[in-house]
Image 1 (tube, rainbow, N blue to C red):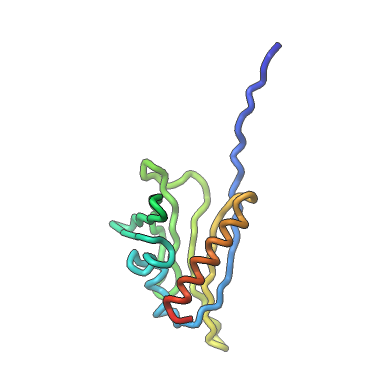
Image 2: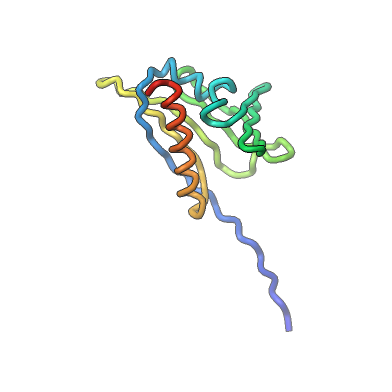
Length: 140
């Protein structure tokens, strides 16, 4: 009799976006999404950066991400790194993009992230909590 070993399946992460209305100008908001000083306090408890590698700390856990692109007063995109410092081998990233309506001048923060179906609800709640903290900091 052959025993078939179970092969663990890795669930593919799916892209999702969240939109938050923020009552702050893109110029004021941008440093909060693109710099270590800005990200510390709302996105992570502690944040440091060196040569586009950001180290985030939450409750004793440390994660690293590379800032792969940024556009002044518009967006910042990060790619998570594995323990060896290499980019995680999938298409995922997380991005924070500032959009301003040309007619109303309303500002929105668009968060793009990737997650599995099982983790999506928790991940969305974490982003909502973090962005709520950001809004408090910028007076929104």
